[in-house]
Image 1 (tube, rainbow over the protein chains, first blue to last red):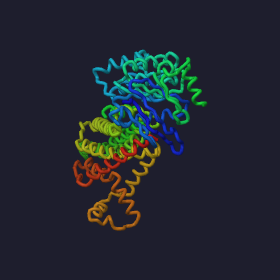
Image 2: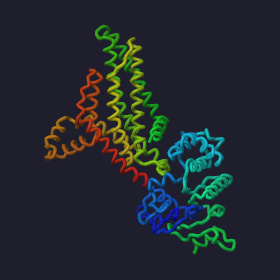
Image 3: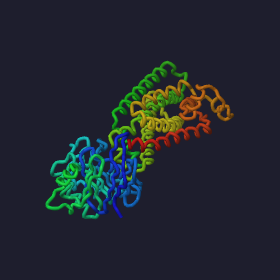
Image 4: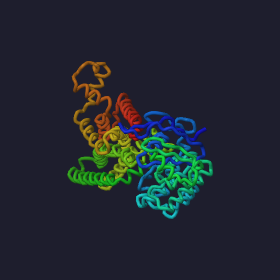
Length: 235
Length: 271
């Protein structure tokens, strides 16, 4: 069974077509990157997956069932492009609140919180309020929120935006760890070089159209994802 | 739902405007206390301190009740737009949280703040008036009135939340203020409409103004009726609520606006 499947998805915002007849699927347990420049329609697809948007045309499935079902949300973790949360919460209060909504019990909470804060190096600043954090620190809190609960599918929209190289490395390591645990990971990014080091497969979305889908192992002669991406959108 | 309710209280507690509401309430309280001191000096012996105390609390709470309507529409107008504009709703609804639970949590959180506001006001008023009159004051009528004021607050918050999805924070607040004045000024909830309604006369053509009044009568909370009951309860200590049709009506209004809210909310979040 596919982890995620898009069948003939098109979506319009008013008269503007954001995505056009997109078809692709992603196997369970894969780390997948959807690559494309800004405005390619990547966020639209991720919102359709969560159920925040209903596609104008086509169907989208998660674990073989229509996307957006409430039961999926218990097994899904999502990071928006700009993580924004109540600024008056401290990091630990925000993560605890998210953990509670994702079903983390009081007994597990402290352990989860330590694990998530350690993983994204926000342990030292966990008593700081969100309004006192830099953009990069806030994004790391958003990433830590992904670990506040059990999920099988991780959806990350531009997770590297605003991060310094050290934090980018942390994110890639965390995604690789989750991949090793058999989790399905769907990452939207326009930072193509970053994808090279952690994905199993990728697809290129350009001006709302799916240009190619490929396994990383299919690239030949030392071809990089960036070379492939540039050749695909030019040609 | 529980976590959203607590989050609502915390979120609104942080709002600077609530501080302004509290300061203005304190001013009303101090003015009322000064007035009570004056009355006590002028009419010393004419009324018992108990009567003066209970009447003062009644008048104060009635004024606070009107003030509470503004607080309800202020809170109701900002509960959803602050989350939607900050894209926090997107994130929250990606978690295992149903829109129903989110909205009920927000609604109950909002009404909890209004109840807290009423409760604190009456407590402070009782303390202050007790000190002025030098007798312990406690009014069960005030507690009953606070309870019934919460119903109208629920309806007002629900209505403001729905308007805020179309009109934004400020638009909803202004519309609701006009509506509130409209309800008081037009006194559309006069009993004649109930009579017309039960006799079937409501379905006869009675001109456009009457049709508007009838719709307003059916779809908006009858604040003036509830206020009249509360006033009577506070000033006379008698419970003369005719709860039959009116309690069905307030529940119907609350349910109707909440259902509309539930229907519109997901579409508004998507846009």
